[in-house]
Image 1: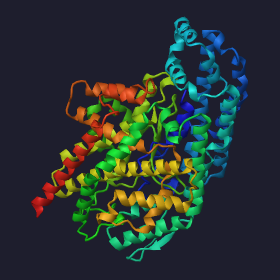
Image 2: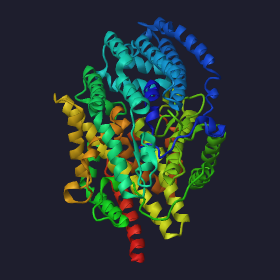
Image 3: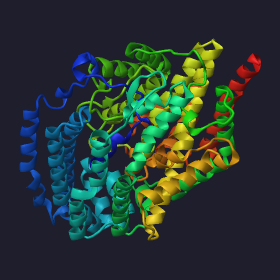
Image 4: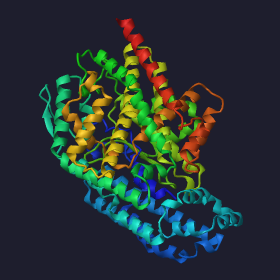
Length: 624
């Protein structure tokens, strides 16, 4: 029964970077490029009505307390009621989240979100007796119930998983206390979100051409790509310099979030926060640590990429502020929404008619909110937790190839949700976050290879090849760098060391300089970059970021099979998308054709990365 979890993490299915965008007033945007939230609730008033009915039903579950183990009928009816109520709770909550993300400054919607947070806590508290009672039932009795009540099978994976993690379950009274703690558990992230998206005093600066610009989270993604090197450096200094001024506040927020993770890990008897986070999907801890080890062992490939970047930019010393600069001069291709749609549909055609038709529906039925507007949440995500409606995608589209790739990425999440919700009953429709990024990255890879095969111009090919390398940099190496930082701050706190804005800045400096070869002269990392951790919202997601890296490697392996026309590969992939949470993600991926407990997916990624660099060097050698 993980739908309550997916509610809070659905918006984490992001592209991994802030949008490269300039805001425009929402009233000026054509309606077809905005969400139609009436498909969830026609009006705020209808939302209020449903919410009131939902609250009035919260006590219905009490009739099963103390009786779950008396019959198969009671067990099924209790779980089915919780499932139905959870589905409605998610719908109520998502409506407020989507409205808030359109304008984070809207105090009325913020109040609605806060109200739903309270209701959610009440819900969790009233239903907290269920899991402890189930664990009191003898396993043989459970098996008897399954034989007696065929409908109970829909909850079999959930019950088996509950029994697997039994040693971390608490008594009924203790579970109620833990549920009540949910009232404050999301406070660090909520505070960070409001502070960084609405209240933070983002700076202005003057470019070398005399233009004044405002650098917030959304526009930073655009201005860090400026061709003028001095302007780029000034953008980094100005943006991160302002973040550094507030490092103590950012540090206190992140420290509170780490302490929250520690609280839940300790009360449930886990050795540490990492073990607690990974146990939800039954992910072996070694998968996380092996990823960090594999990346550190392959920094030579990453440094080869950085040296290519330096060579193509023609600079004597590569700097961190150069990493997002265009390396191919004269390529200013801009893409409209329709251009992006056509390109994506062509690239994803091998995935079948239903896949393509559903993407067309996403555009025509307003599943997407396309453009940046004042107060809108930065970044991109797909929220697929509305089982009876459809997924909703948030973008901040600005017409760059990166925006096209991000759109393909989020459509991957959307299609994963679509197939899972269509083919699974609600209790098993909620796929693991570990599996979530596979579908999105898979689409990015297909888009790259399709577009590359259609382009003959060397400049454009160089641009695409470098864009792909930048993706590997951002997703495999950069996200693992984040994962290592996240692991270290939790280890510091768990060993009794104090976390502050200054201590986290020092830790981040050591990690980022090791990854980018600062001491080897490969890429100079200025001191101001050490505060970059304060810019990353994913550190509030409880060991989420490593899954971008593992998913890229899994997607690379799966996409290779589909692109090569391997017999049964496509069918296995669609089956994976349709499997939801019917099994553990490691098992689902293994069935699809990739074993994440081995280093093979990572090795395939490094092989592809080096092939791309070989292609770039061929073009450069031809020119020289």
